[in-house]
Amino acid sequence: MENTYEKLIEFASIQGFYLGDYLVMLFKILIIVIMAKIFTGILNRLIVNFFRVYPKFKADEKKVNTLTGILKSVIKYTVYTVMGISILNVIGIPTQAVIATAGLGGIAIGFGAQSLVRDVFSGFFILFEDQYGVGDYVTIGAMTGTVEDMGLRITKIRSFNGDLHIIPNGEIKTVTNHSRGNSLAIIDVKTAYEADQEKAVDILKSVIQQYYDKHRDMIVSDPEVLGIISLAESEVVIRSIIAVKPLLHWKVEREVRKLVLDAFKHNGIEIPYPRRIYVNKEQT
Image (cartoon, rainbow, N blue to C red; front, top):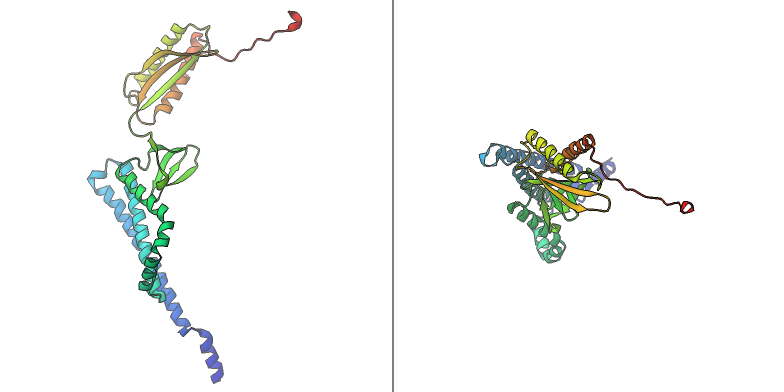
């Protein structure tokens, strides 16, 4: 009977610990993880509420979203670091030894973490220089889209077709921000050489003026018909420009082109199309 009891004790213990000790350890780790999640959620909520209440940021929603994303990233990394150290202490691994080991291997790790440090520093410079913010429509390298999220290390932009591009901040060299300042709608209209060009210009001026009268809330200055800008192979190109509020130029261009097309059809102005002349050698 005693031998059986000793075997059970030996089975339940691992390196001097009883099974109950490991259950207590797991319970402590679980509490630490839960508390870290709760603490992170509370701090994130405080950040959001702070920007909603603080009057300086009420009018700039894009900057609020950007700063919120950055601060949430800082909180996440800080809380996770503290959580990791606390778990090591619960397990029984001396954190002093871990920190000392990390110090000895800091040079080797530093070489591998250079890109990470570069990404973080670049993220701070992008933020403080106000190069772009969440909600801005930007071109970064070969990628164009709306800034969906900005963190300490990466920037996420969503392209027009729905693709999500994740770009390390350290790799961002050139940024074109399409959301800062007014946009310019450029409407190029092509007419056939046989068409009455003066009449076409007059129709274009009338259409654009009518559009301007109905949409003064989108247009920031008087539209202008520049006239003929190109004599192409089979068409004459007439250009008009309209200064509009940021990112509304695509909408204005589409709507004006539709109105011009209808007006040209109604007034008999021919739209050019490719033409080919076939010569039958047997008839020549």
